[in-house]
Image (spheres, rainbow, N blue to C red):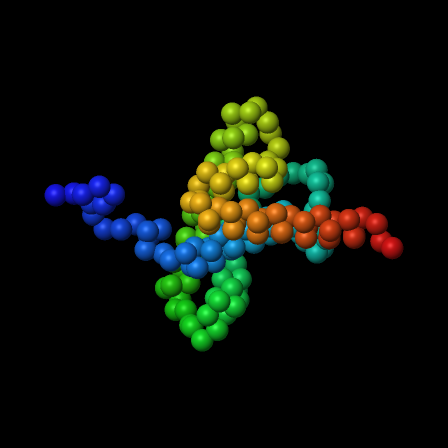
Length: 157
């Protein structure tokens, strides 16, 4: 018999991950979003708002970032190639979900420009409670860093 609040079948991947590990995942998603904003062109210059021919950019999850965050949280822990692939897939999946939810919001509101507001709303919808708050604060921090860097390059002093 199934009691209230119990699930039938094996637990999902998200149910088995502890909060610090989810925080790590959220941090990595925030880093990916920040990296997507700070894409650089072939000469190494930031491509900020330049118009041009659009091409598909393959989704690449930065394994070194995952490794460095793991070093910060658990300095003595190692990670296998299989586990790194799982982490890459997990981060890429969350990135896809957030991007898809943000795209749905754009369609609902009849807009064409994806902003931090849509990303923030998507994160709040998709992630549970404390994790969403942590992700939003990390994303806000990353956006502030981006804006400072943009202003520094725009007005050399």
